[in-house]
Length: 324
Ligand code: UFG
Image 1 (cartoon, rainbow, N blue to C red):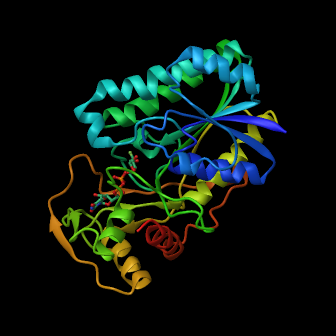
Image 2 (image 1 turned 120 degrees about the horizontal axis):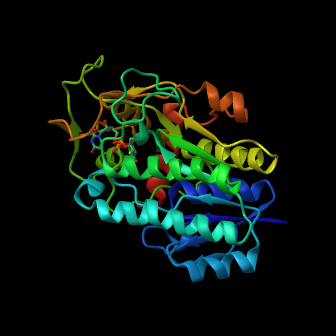
């Protein structure tokens, strides 16, 4: 059995990736401090609770499990928080990534699949966004992801590190079997917030911006199912284990939906009108973020299977009702 070290494996995308890897015969060894992840989400391998900024802890885990590669999900993910507290983002997403890399190299582990973000592009000049499009992140969260990618690139020629940096667009949905799902606190993502409004857990949802240059005036995003993201991580892992070169890839569907379209899809799934009020734009939200999704298909043979908007909302709704 091949061990894979999974930082942040108790989190939303990380836990779905663990399930997917276990299904393919790998043992996901989760390294997570449970600051935002959940013990209940670690079901497919051991949990080594600890901080990835703690080198001694990492050394113990690498020595104990001798992983063949690392999947690196651990990090802070809230754009607004990164503006208010950039030190936290540079510590958690950059400095701790460096500590992780140093530990990997000390234990002769040279392959990493990394949880990057469309936030590395900032406000795109045009959509769909290609991997080579200008990288101009507009907040410390996006900068921190871009810096990590840059560090990996520099570590390639110097130390033989190979990375697959996967730039997620909007991760959404939940495990179709209902075993795991999204559980952020506070919740800032559109679909869980819509579902909370649908079930009466919150009075209404706020639509941030109705004056964007989009067909219905609300912002457009490329929603990709978390199970599809997990499958892409497995494919990237196999690619690196098979000798593949370092690569940065968009993970999106190539199709965007507006906030109003997502609300309409949720109303159809939940069978109830969803109370919403119109608010001004949220600072730093670009009008449209949609991936060019061909490169990942060429390199990894990955194509989304679950990312139809209705299926995303249905799986999220089932998970929401389980939690309620
Ligand atoms: N939105 C609302 N109301 C809400 C929440 C969101 O109208 O209550 C809107 C946002 O303005 C945005 C869209 O719904 O237009 C999606 O918002 P999310 O917060 O779900 O996701 P973002 O697109 O803002 O953020 C995602 C990732 C980030 C990443 C960013 C850019 O969650 O990690 O894409 O790549 F940084």
